[in-house]
Length: 61
Image (cartoon, rainbow, N blue to C red; front, side):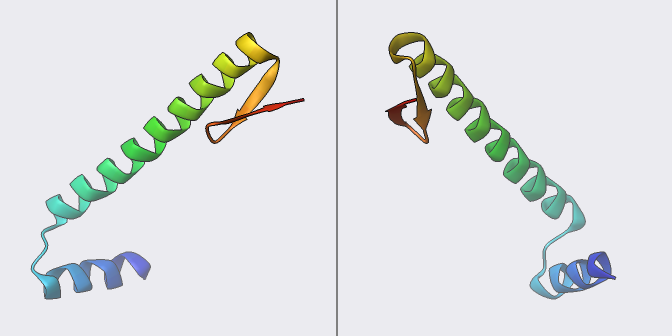
C-alpha cells in the first residue's frame, strides 16, 4: 500500500521509478558511508586515547 502511494506521488511529481531507485540507493550509500566514517573515528579514538569518538567528539571511558 505504501509503495503504491509512493509510486502515485512520484508519478504526480513527474519522477520515474528509476529516479526513485537512484535516490533511495544514494540515501542508503550515504548512511553507510556515515556509519563507516564514525566507526573509523571511534577506532582511531580508542587506539590513540583510550576513549570513544561519539560523533566526532573524543570522550574518555
